[in-house]
Image (cartoon, rainbow, N blue to C red; front, side):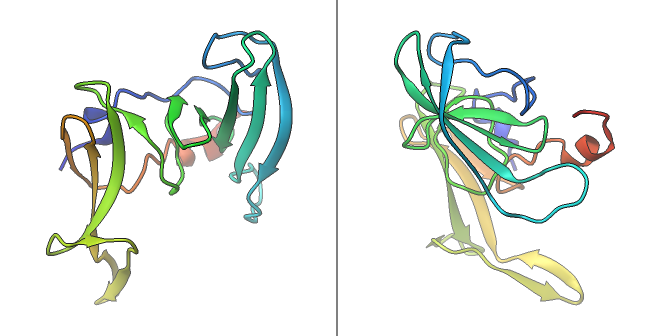
Length: 166
């Protein structure tokens, strides 16, 4: 098994969801919000909905989306799912940057025998929930990557709930 961070060069940002935004292309803080949406997951206490804030940079005119889940996990993406900065902590499909060659890394799944699958399932076996699939991240350019235990980066969500972050 490999860790996601052994495969991709993307790293979590130290940025709060409610903190200032910047352009991931030119680093300008002159950013206009075009639209914001979020999932409607119920919660009590901290908001762990997935937020999408669509933006345009007033300095370089590039468009991007600032996404967040939880108060401390922020990442920036393009419309095609390419991660520009940060690391997503959501099940959606994203395009990461390969640690070895800089190419595009994507996630895919197989069943337990290694056949590609589109949908994943878990089964209750003797009272335990067991994945009936394997998760892989692999570079489309150089082939680097492998099986990972987790489907996606989950951040430090348990510690976020205990933190005194806004």
